[in-house]
Length: 555
Image (cartoon, rainbow, N blue to C red):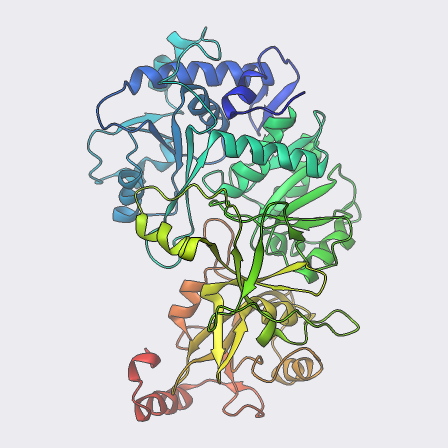
């Protein structure tokens, strides 16, 4: 079957297919019922959103992962509308800003999220509450609609379909644009790459307001005619029971979800399931190996973003730890932050450990064509992405002599210690080898004089405690831990703080710095033993920052 040009075409293809297409804990729908449900909602949407001068065909979705979410995605595709996924962890003015910024005319939500909207000024917004009798009555007259019966205008490959918010870790989130054609092509590419078939079942446990779940999980299932199974919110304890119950064969992950799965109690039947693949980002080589050993499932680390400005393709000869090579047509380079010149190729030890991080790590830049379609109403952010006609990803990478690319974190996670540029992800990958660590986050805190110092947050495995001598011995035994990489400060936490998309909340960690609740250990001098950071040491540090004229850096 030829690839579809639009998401709407993929939705229409489900019509007449009576295999199971969509499931959650309480509902089972066939592909045909999914298409019919999308058609009914598209017809309703067209009536609720008539063309008006200056009115954008934008629909907000403020839902957990319920069947209504993919049904409304399908409805928007058929109607030629665009979906803004609204993050339910946002609050007050920030939540209102997201809805107003994307110019949503209709908002689909559920009763559990109605309190989030209390008191918000959202003029002209029509709110539909899916788990109410009023919603069912509103939808009932459209029950006989067929895909293609109702649209707000012509539906083409360039029709706007997604306004996907970025994480917003450094200011207000930006809404990246994605057309129907780009999403349909992304789905088809993943179908080909991972050999997704009609009998596969994609388990969507990451939040659907985030691009990962829609682009990397829902879209390839739709493109292949595969089934979709939903978990309302990610649950590590329910992961394997869900996989077995739904017959799931594929899932996606973001951030620290893999660590939560590894932290569940092991069982004798951990490999008794139909899963064949996990696809995502930021699991790390150590946890990926642990996951495969325990569950028998390979995790394929990918690279992508809501912006879609650069693509890396994994090939069968991709080394362990690498993402892959530049996709055909992309001219990807790793450029140094200070000079803009290409970074030196990575050098590795015989055991595969990076030896020259300071000179090899830089920002990934696409100097060729880019599918980036821009940000909604944000020309400044677009200009920053497209400096000099190139697409600057905002992500740190290093490249080996054969052209394979390795992820090293966000540019926001770069540290500069004693004049040396370091990448947080490189240090995290080293610290993750410590057998007592369940989760690791590395981040910069200001140095009293200039630049940064290294701080690490550690979440320990169940039953483990932090022994400073053992940790120092572990650091000393790591041959690829550069002289500037060892953490000066170590914060021990029951678990790492996470964003709604299961990424480490680095902003919160940096904000707390070493003046935070809970145990913090530090080295008064680079070669000194770790010791508790008590009140006397904090007073001395405050005075030290003040003596160097940087009291604001202390906080």
